[in-house]
Image 1 (cartoon, rainbow, N blue to C red):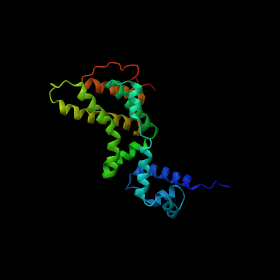
Image 2: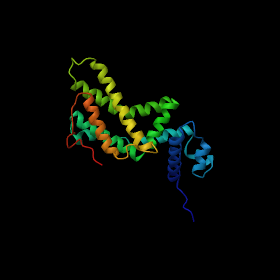
Image 3: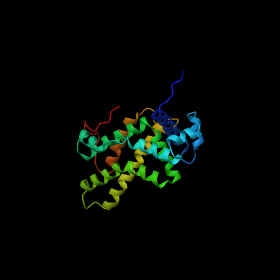
Image 4: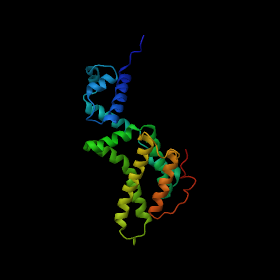
Length: 213
């Protein structure tokens, strides 16, 4: 006799199927009927748990929000120096995405779809990086550096792009042209390269900041 799923179990099954479909096709590319077929239930059963496709999508995002990293703990564990904390934050972020690439897929779809609520959600996920970099560089860079304010603002955006591209290459591409480098090694090199580009010449990060894997 097959196991009859409880209400919470059924809801989680539906949510997992919806997450995978949203990751593959985006919000507009998925229908309620398609989600229902994926879990072998009728749309009527699905609507017992979620009022609409938008409600399901919001639940998927909420699930991601529940997995948000504690960057405060990261800074404490990796030291308070700017370069060490940034390396630790990067490690935590990439580990989270590597375990659940659907987050990155849905983010990329959201950029094309232009959903304001979704875009705000993912912008907030990156905000910890950009805010910390802007704060750190404001403390670190001398005030007589040419174009200081522009440098601080663009540095955070540059690092966000570097991290995202590494994740796309290592987590989403069918063929990894950097297969000889682990995600952690690549991340470590990325952080060191970024630091050098803004004048922090760290050939090696400190023992606390070293990313291993």
